[in-house]
Image 1 (cartoon, rainbow, N blue to C red):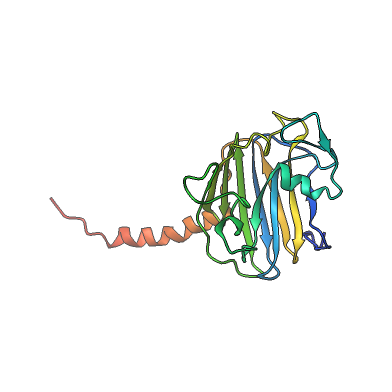
Image 2: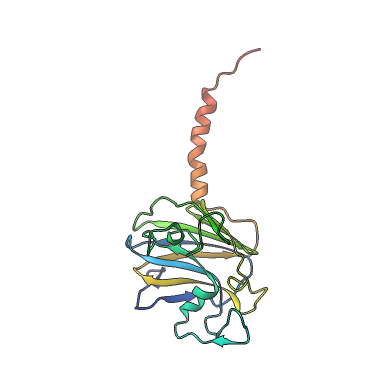
Amino acid sequence: MIDGEMVAQPAGEIGLCYFSHPLADFTLRLEFKLSSESDNSGVFVRFRNPRLPVPDRNNPNVVYPYNNRAFVAVDTGFEVQIDETARPDGADKHHTGAIYNIPTEPGEIGFQKYSRPAPLPVGAWNEYEIEVIGQAYKVRLNGKLVTTFNNVDDYRGKPNSVDADSGFIGFQCESGRVAFRHVRISTQPPRPTFESEIHAHMREMPTLAKSSKSEKVSKS
């Protein structure tokens, strides 16, 4: 923690900071800030308890302990990416706002619908909203819907209502110093309103008022 913010600190291999209570359906809201355009981090959702061995995909009676527990989140959950350079290849599926490494091409099995957002300025706070209901994922960045995804992989992304040892949420520590703050989780609908959405609505109001005053009313 630095000045009330959670700051991801790189240290060789990737790291993971996660919340101790798993969830089923949820809406996660948070703010994050880049310290450099080359920062690489992300938000992991719906992964298994990193303290436990991971069952084999094809034979759950076989389990594997992980030396680096951060990879439990990689293999059993999904990452909402934070990477303006979209490493390693610049592809949409590796860019900020995307579900990492999930195909974005229509027609591929389990693809995500992704709309690349405008570049994020370094040093500015941005708002993420990640909604997971059943196996339907929605990602909003600064009030704009950028990703929708329906998970068809029954091995990954299990809620704790299906697997009591799954459903965890956490932040990836990989490279750069990405800061997080104002983390809020809701397990109840309806979806909260983004602060940026309120500001956008307020900006529209004077325009609408001006338009209404300029309209001429014809007398019958």
